[in-house]
Length: 137
Image (cartoon, rainbow, N blue to C red):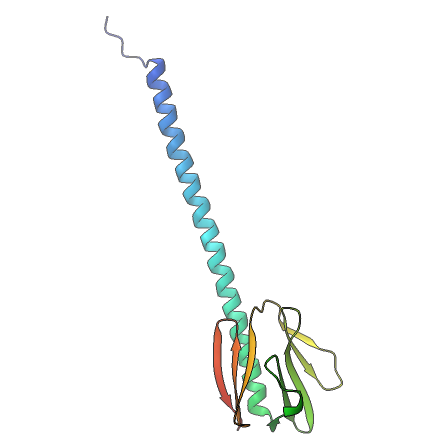
């Protein structure tokens, strides 16, 4: 007898192989999606940190001096036209405060912020993965 139909064993093997390929494909697509999401989050974080750092650098360039009594590793105080502004770390956020005004959150995703003074003429700023050195004009 010449029977060209599938047996039950062959059908089960085909279903198993197809299911295995399907599971591997779906797993790979989920991994790609998660990796892409993480890459976007890292990129957004880096762009936000860069924008915040540029804002701080611009304010330092406009400042007359660093106000030393309140400047520390977690706070930078600047004197601009006899008015004071502060950059500081507040509950995992980078905050900016002008004298007699309410604080403004510049960046809400900060893991690390450090200000290091350089001989009363400049400051090294470390913000998340970014580091820059700026001197007063």
